[in-house]
Image (cartoon, rainbow, N blue to C red; front, side, top):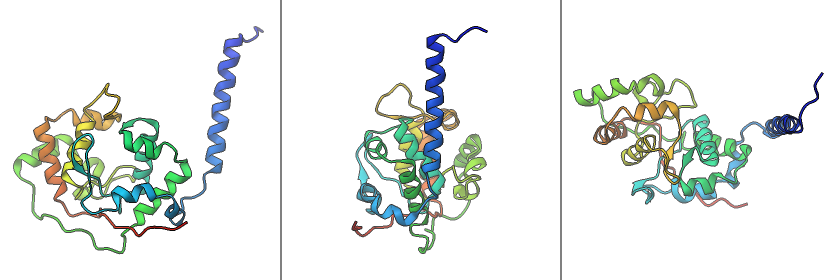
Length: 225
């Protein structure tokens, strides 16, 4: 039997160490605790807890409403910012230091936040013929569900009623590659977003932003340690 080369041994040991670290991290992660997030969301409240608050990067737009969003989706988004799969300097700085436990707790908190508030009303009636063609072309309801507010899996976001200007910026981000500051790496959404022109993305965003929604901004009191 041939002995392993030093390089092969190094690769095997490195891979094993990585697997063990992943197992240890999984074992250290407890069930999500929304109450534990109250000491972890100080950086979130400054933007997502202010009604009408606007960001200026990569262009001026309202920050997304995250209260009432699916916890599994919020966790996936924060993890993507932490890994750099979603490129955004501010969110990278916020998500970077968070542990998996922190992310799960924060996600659970925001899913439950504002549940005692009624859903936000939106426009009634069918979309225009032009918008319906775009929705059909993108097959949006296949993942985001009825009214784009009931995703088929909690790892997908509720879109209905989200700020239209934010939706437009987010959709454009899926079209961007090879930019160190802007862009989102997601093969499904990347393929979908690239089917549309920018005016079509804006038309979609404006329609979706007017739908009835579970999403909301809930002003938060300052939590004390």
